[in-house]
Length: 249
Image (cartoon, rainbow, N blue to C red; front, side, top):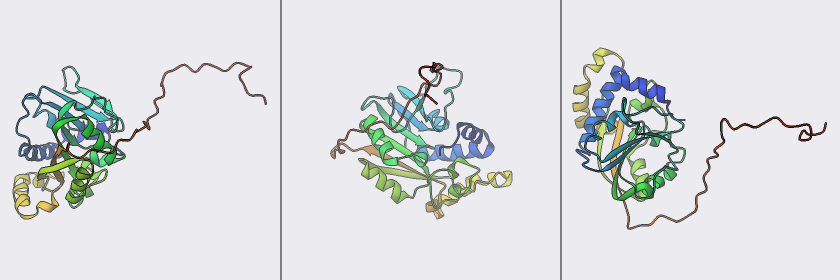
């Protein structure tokens, strides 16, 4: 089950959410400095981090899963948000250069199908960054943050998934070494926790961040995939059955 869009937005507006945003953004900056004239898609709830990249990109979109819900982004501007199914993205092949997944993979109904779809829409040489809860970390065990929902991953599980779906894992980073406490006295020590955590207990970070590149020299099996989605018009008039149409008693 996806985290709800209302809960995600409220978390990032809280003091704990702002600290988490800053910690993850610093780790992302070590992987992606600038994205000049590239096409970027954020999948999941990536808008707190897309703001840092979109000034340099050719265009930036926020794709939000249907099970999560969507909000307008950027605020007070023409919307760049789309409500999507993560296994059937509304993009042609090789359409984007970069994809940033946050609050996405851990909620995927079929992670392999989702990754194959991302491979399809990425351009040759395109890059992907995945931010997922670390199964060894404290944040994955606390349900008052969105990182405590969904399926957490180990670094080995994430690497194996990337290789199975034709991605080459590359650079990685960690974030959220401070405890997910709402106490101001604990939050003030965030900087010290982050510095010490990177040096002393990197395997217990709250999230794992891995970059991967689309691999071209090994083809994926070609198979026709029938959509499992059934679209029913919500407001289509059904009418009232006539006497002849009613079943006899």
